[in-house]
Image 1 (cartoon, rainbow, N blue to C red):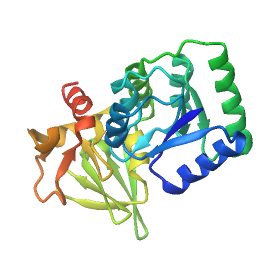
Image 2: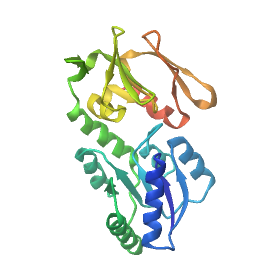
Image 3: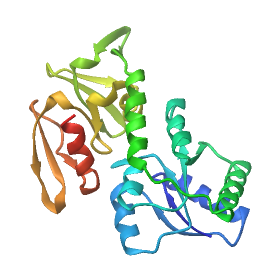
Length: 254
């Protein structure tokens, strides 16, 4: 069985490949990909594998965008650390998942399930856009009204409506507010993304932006988009990849 792994953490991808081959030496990992854009490019130029193992959150977006774009018709196993609400979306769409961290038993059981499904020629559902909608709808139920900032002995509540964007630099996550205040938070961008809800969009590995903080969007080279913020002194250019551009524009007009 030819398998493609989509995972941006190198060691996680290596471990997963080892477990897959350990289960059956006839299995072959034909590619290990790390981003939405790289995956779409690769799959447009190479034959479709028999199976995908894929992380959900990639540096330039959600992996669902890949499978929606390529019209995937083969099984996908998502490797996820997402909250319970996300798993319900997979059940609705008949797509399998495993929770990180995983081991020999986890991978073995999953591959057995995939083999049974393939031998019985069960149909593969491919409506990944509905999964994205499910995730966004469910995420609205987890939105926080305030983010707590710990500064020395102080605990400062920041109302989420005051947050313009969050930025990751050198492993440190910063929150910038509309009144040009800058705070350090111990929450990752992944955590903030799930806590802040659909008003915010994870543009790339570094930026999570509030829709209300966007002044305009410009076309950028290679069919990318450049986001211009209402705030001044944004620490870096905010670029939306070609792979995420359509989804970003759909979000922007919601």
